[in-house]
Image (cartoon, rainbow, N blue to C red):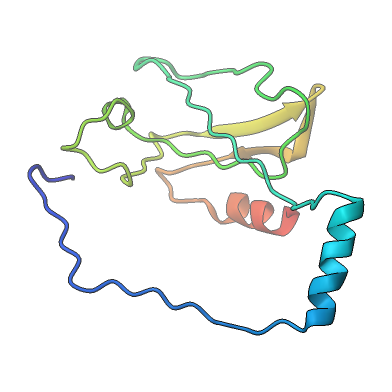
Length: 137
């Protein structure tokens, strides 16, 4: 649980920067390359979506979650709604499974990347589901 009235004290903060001398020939080559074309830096887009599931619900379906490019990785986490709304008395890192028993992603009605996972938290039988996830990627 989070605590009210906490205070963060930083006793010592350091930044270490490595100074290097670049060969002038390399600097000239970079300058010539930048004259011909703009620099391109690959980046991965990260998108966070929040879905609320009403309390007595036992199932939820989210259609058309992704428009355009299909994500490489999907991370699902469940937290209390009060944490999302900014309650400082609760920890945002207190994830809970809420007895989820089934999760799957379907693209064009086909399960991706494999069959949906069937979870059993009461019997603590999660090995097969987790191993399927790890070995699939």
